[in-house]
Amino acid sequence: MSARSPRTLSDINALSPEAFEAHFAGVLEHSPQYARAAARARPFADAEAVARAFAEAFGAAPADAQLALIRAHPDLAGKAALAGDLTPESAGEQASAGLDRLSAEEYAEFHALNAAYHARFGLPYVVCVRENTKASIFEGARRRLANTPEQERAAALFEIGRIARLRVLDLIQGEGA
Image (cartoon, rainbow, N blue to C red; front, side, top):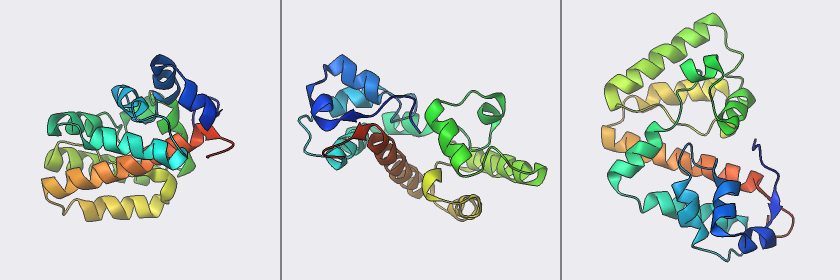
């Protein structure tokens, strides 16, 4: 799903902080500052340790920074997707779940769900689409609309951790992957 070529764990551990940030810049949507924070946890024993470093970086962020991270995610099958303005990572992930091939009725339902999410929570609906089907994404959105704002922020951050983990694994190859 990444536009960058995978690197070995040894290479990743040896990267300069700037090169590490560049390699992992797309792990968290429009939020490369978390790659800088994750880099400080090196050396990593394996790919899962890299993924944990990202989760710990955004988990330790203040609430307003966490909300900004959630809001950096695009609406599923939303205006950015229709306009081709998604990050390469998001575009590939949405395509993997068939969200780039929706019927007119499905687009209308996503538009309604996205609008309901923004009205209720002031946030986009965030889900790890690579671990879901189109049907489970729709079902999850309907179910999560019943969450409290606090529950939904926690659910979105959990999903961001799942997304980040898969994106990290895409960027590591060979030993330790």
